[in-house]
Length: 242
Image (cartoon, rainbow, N blue to C red; front, top):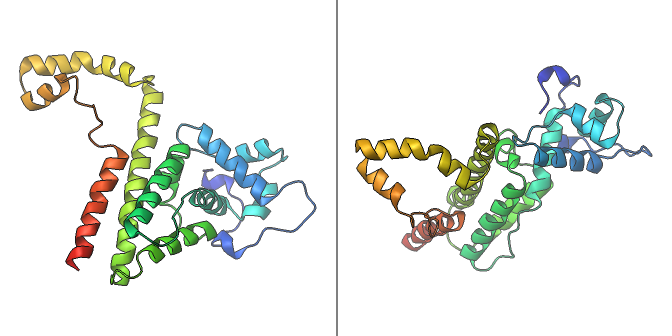
């Protein structure tokens, strides 16, 4: 997002208090948010500036966009809520199936928009799509006899897995871009001399034996889906104990 020096507007709080202007101008809040999301998706770190957004939508100056989004935090609010709208929670039924879909669709969303995982910690999730997602998730847990803190804890456990996995994805992509190692094969070859030296020295025999096993990643030992199932297993045991 833009540095503080670029944000010349006064803070107005959450963007949800400020409806977009109803004018006949060629810009709209939706157009600006779409452009910002596209720019964030294109950048390996998910960085966006108001100047870049203005250029994408054809505005002469970034200042002309502030009346639509308030300030840079307002733009982040809108970008985040756009992605929250991509997360699916089914109608209440099987609570475990609902939370599984929450996790799976959330993971699909952060793979499309890895920056979402980083920016989600910077703003409160109070947009209409975010609130609808939380409401449907909590509705799925009705009837289990859980207290309020535990219900939100269940939802937070799944979303925490989504966001931590998204942060790992974002940082790994940035690392690979910096190092110029864009494939697993390139990364493996780059570190092979170091791993060979460790194996010869015998300092970490258990790790070296694992690294030398050609089947060590088949199947992937910690896929998103596998960890999600482990989490759901733990949550189910909590329900059964209760």
